[in-house]
Length: 181
Image (cartoon, rainbow, N blue to C red; front, side, top):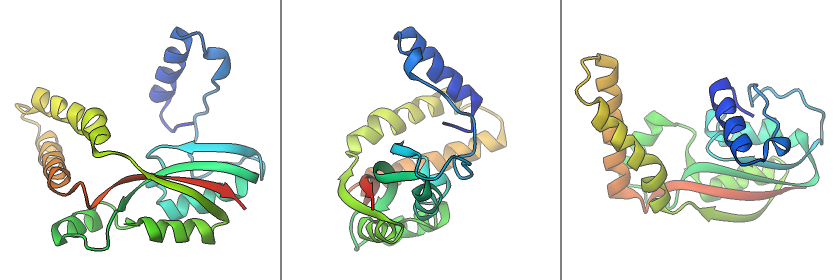
């Protein structure tokens, strides 16, 4: 499920290339406004998408759709420690004011009708290999652009990259493995 037809088309093409197209059904829609039947999802997997609704908002929107004892695996950006450097706190309060700690997110899950089965942090190496590394390559390809919007995006991305490089031990993505209770 995605709001972007382009992403769904790519998924369908990759599934077809692997002979898995019969196992994949794509749905183009807004994940915050699903009109599915209550208790109709046995397994929900969301990587990075809850961010668009906020973690608390995603839990509120998706919990009624979960079957009894259904499993939800949702990743979310969060602080790893209570002692967050001021530069990190300021950056994330501007970029994503809903950011919280793992313990705060666990409380949100519990109050939304989920029991926490586990919380697992995404290693910083995954950020470099799959996110910041490709971003740096794109920046290098676009750095001579005369477009002011592109230059703003490049500056903001470089700022974020430097912040993560210096403070990866303080924040990152965690996967919340939860059971609908």
